[in-house]
Length: 159
Ligand SMILES: [Fe+2]
Image 1 (cartoon, rainbow, N blue to C red):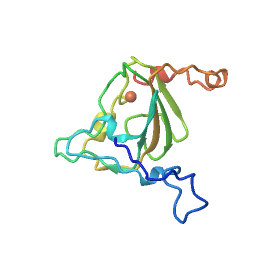
Image 2 (cartoon, rainbow, N blue to C red):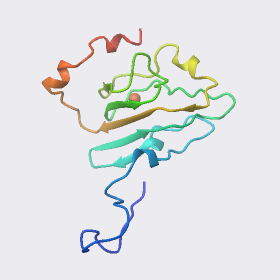
Image 3 (cartoon, rainbow, N blue to C red):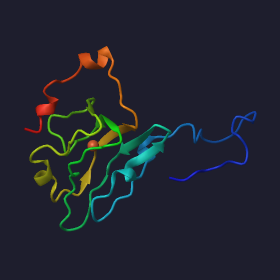
Image 4 (tube, protein in one colour):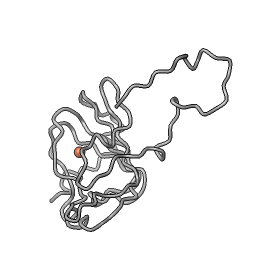
């Protein structure tokens, strides 16, 4: 991440000719770093705030080492809750997760590819997935509306 400082505040003008950057950006313009081996999650980080980060998972080439395994590894985030919104495409590492779904993995809960997803990923060269992840550095509190749409069987989807 790096800072960008403008000489004049953009609100301190009568008008200007050009785009609305940096107040508006398209996820389709985000280009993550790719590599021969699996890249760490921060390559997907598009925004950084005091108590959370936003990562964009966009169409990209998978790891291109001949022996690479494109599926992510199992992990548990000890410092953040992880909320993922699956926008579009095929979500390689998860079975039963489809467009429009949200998943929430609270801090410390181990999670990763569903059974068979690692094997299925071998040899694949690219993904068309589009997903947005919010990692919060304080626990998220679920509303009654969120609890009402919970899929209680999700936790068993790794079995
Ligand atoms: Fe995760």
